[in-house]
Structure formats: structure tokens, C-alpha cells
Length: 114
Image (cartoon, rainbow, N blue to C red; front, side):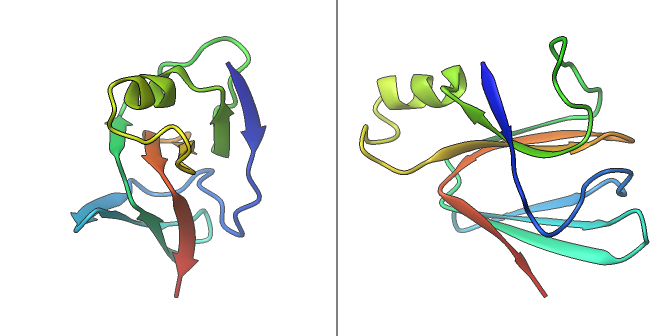
């Protein structure tokens, strides 16, 4: 598994426990950052997501912030099952809230909203 840090414009490091709302194929992620500022992120065309309160990580995985999994087995399983077309532009993203857990998502894109 290869990972690539993402430049998001927001940080999940030391953030509050997020709220998750699945609305019509979009996942809305709402939390307060380490400065107690409200952050809202929308993830578009969500195929799958997983929240775990206890972080289970392989050695060398970052414990905080946001990154993309390159050559993701989880994403490949969705392609193999026919859930995602082979040529589709989906990504496996990980949002690490080191103080409270992690969110993994297969989606097309994400954006911070104000």
C-alpha cells in the first residue's frame, strides 16, 4: 500500500469527533479543528465509507491529517465487484482524527465548504 499526503486547506489533527451525514450519495463531514473553528467537507459520489473510533494502523501509517491510498485494495475490490467502472475516477481517502478515530472513504472528490 502506498500513501500520498493531500493538501486540503484544513487539518483533522487534534480535531473534534466529526459528524457524518450521508445525503443522496454525498457524505457531509462536520468537525471543529484544533483552533475550535468549524469545518465542513463534502465528499461527492461516495461508494463506501468506514469510521473507526480506535485507529488500527500498519507500521509507518501517519496518525493524523489526510492522505490518499494509491493502489488501494479496497478500491480494487469495488472495481472487481462491478460497483465502480474500471475507468471511473474514484479515490480512496483517509481522514485521520488522531484524538478520536479515522474515516476512510471511496469517492470521486471532496471539497471544503463555507
